Structure formats: structure tokens, C-alpha cells
Image 1 (cartoon, protein in one colour):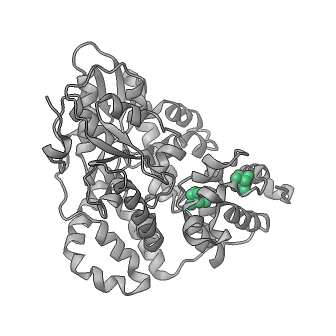
Image 2 (cartoon, rainbow, N blue to C red):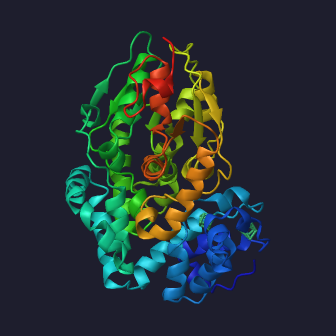
Image 3 (cartoon, rainbow, N blue to C red):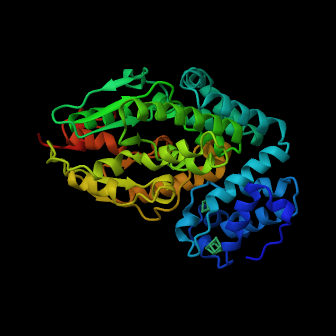
Length: 440
Ligand code: SF4
Ligand code: SF4
């Protein structure tokens, strides 16, 4: 694509990066076929190609964002299906991240939208605040019907609907410390405790630590880790996202310097995509660029790490039919497609893949901020999952677990919980013995 940026515009490294990306796009439109919002809404401006044109126009003309561009960029899930499909290697992720930051700096949203976003950014990244908010949400549940009738308050209704009816207690696993590996030492890793996942389902990291330590891997929970920054990054709040990234880079760098780390393990694929991008996000910060690149280079999803270990034979032989839902951040953001399915199959599960696996509707805060599109995509996803005839749904991202579980009749669990169980760990909560069926 031809671009017309001035030399002065290109002196801004963010604009220069976006210009490089824009020049790669050849307008072929292949990406439209796999874009969930284009498939749902049928509007070219809600396709990757349409959004690329809008972003180009805004940046080239040095214009503040307007309502039209905000509408179409807000509807983008950042699922990155378009990047997987694009034959020209267009880095849509970095382009849309730049556009979102530009929107945040130049556009004044309506009051309720501003308040909703400010509240999400204030609450979600902090486990203590999020836990308190979930308790309040339980009290607010009777208001869902009323809030849903008022278009501007739909995000609040979506939030209340997604909030679980009870919150599990905080896990001791989330506290800083070292969990020794059993038997011969096979590695030393850090695990991201994160934010929302540690509140909604602390048993995910418990399963990861339990399985890793049984396999002989020492697991460190470093002092000072926190939210990866993805949730605010996708809202264009760059300063807050970069502050989170720096905090984690510092925590992991200390752990690397103190005892060495083979890997930083992540059990939420949305976080993994962002942490693997820290090197890019902090490339312009001389104090952090090198450290951030080092952190990104050793970050791995739990399934990526386990697939590279020589796993023993599983303790149980379940034979359970599992529908594997590959989160967009897993399959497109990190290009991890094979490992989770192979691990489940090796552990004795019968793995089935739902049709239209590229269509997703959860996407961080998207399910709150764009509840109508998100619900349509969720219902389509759930129909495809149920058509597999599976007894359980497995996936590697807490956002997908929460969203799919809100509509599916099947239990929805993190992949690591099924693996931990098959290799001798406890039965995942909410899954009956019947549906697991595994013989000892
Ligand atoms: S990131 Fe997803 S929703 Fe956004 S343009 Fe690409 S395919 Fe469409
Ligand atoms: S597939 Fe790639 S090159 Fe083609 S229009 Fe989409 S982003 Fe541009």
C-alpha cells in the first residue's frame, strides 16, 4: 500500500513503525474471510482491511480520532485471526495497538464510556480490588434485566452477568516463594500469578505448579509480579500497560539474576501474547529494552513448556471426549496450535476441534465493552462446541473459560487442570467423575 507520511511524521518512531506495517498491505482482502466482526456484521469497515484504511487515513493526516474510527476500532477484538490469514505478513497487532493509543490520546469518549473504561482499568488488574468488585457484583445481579434495557448501561449488565455467583478464596500459590521440584531437578521456572485469573480460578495455577513440581521442575513465584498489562493495553492506556510491563520485567530480571530461570510460565494465553511482546513494547526505553527482550524470549505458555518435557505415562486413562477451544491469543497471538491437543491426546483424552475455530468473542474486556457482538460470537462458538459431542471443554485462557461457561451446558476447564488430573492430580472442580470417567 502506498503511503504519504511526511519526514516530520516519520520522525515519530510509532508512526514510522505503523508506516512500515501499512506498506506491507496489498489490499487483497483475504483477511476479511476470517475476521469475526466482518463475518458477523458484514461491513467492510469492520474488517481488517477496512480498519487498516481508517488507521492509515487518521495517521497520515495527523488527525485526532473521530467517532467513526473509534466505533470500528472498538469493535475489533484484537483476536489477530487476520494476521494468521494475511499472506503479506501485515503486523495488524502493532498497528491496531498504535491506533488504540492514538484514540486514547486524542478522542474524548462519552461520559459513561469513560467511566466504564476507567473503572475496568482501576479494578481488573488488581486482584484485591477485583475480588471486592465481584462481591459487589453478586449484590447487583437483580439489576441485570433493568440495565440491559438501557443501551449505554449494557456494559454494566454484561459485567454482572459474567461475574461468578461465588469467588474462591485466594490461593497460597499466588504468594511469592519457591516450590521445590520432586526427584531429579529438570528445570527452574517462574510462573505468572497475574490478576483476574488468580481471582476467578486460582486452581489453574495450583494445577500448573502441582504438575510441574511432580515432574521435577522448581517453580518460583517472584516478589513484585503483577498484571501483565494486556487488559489496559487493549484499551489504549499505554502508560499503565508499560508500567505493568516494567514492574514484571524487574521482578523476573531479579529472579533470573538470583537463581536463573529457564522459562517464565504463563497459564493465560492472553497474557502470554502480551508478555512475548514486551520486547517490542519497551523497545524505545533504553533502561528496559534489553531486559524486556530477554523476558519475552523466555516466556512460554504452560503447554509449550510441557510439550518440550519428556512426560511419563499418565496415571489415569480417561478416554473422555474433550472439545479443545483454541483461544485467539493462543492460536493467532502465539501460534500455539499443536501442543495443547497433543498433550491432551497423550494424556488419554479424545480431542475434538469445534468448527469455525477462528471465531472468538471474549477478548479481554471486549465481552463487557461490546456485549452484543460478543454474545453473538459466543453463541456461535457454543453451538459449534456442543456439536462435537464432547463431554468437557478445554481451553487455555481464563477469558474464554468465563465466557463459554456462561452459555455452555458442558463443564469448561483449563487444559492444565485436565493434564494435572490425568498425571495424578486432583479432579478439576465442577467436573463430575462421570464426565471424566478415568480409571486409576
Ligand atoms: S484482530 Fe480480529 S476482529 Fe480485529 S480486524 Fe483482525 S480478525 Fe478482525
Ligand atoms: S490479507 Fe493482509 S495484505 Fe491482504 S488486505 Fe488483509 S492485511 Fe492487507
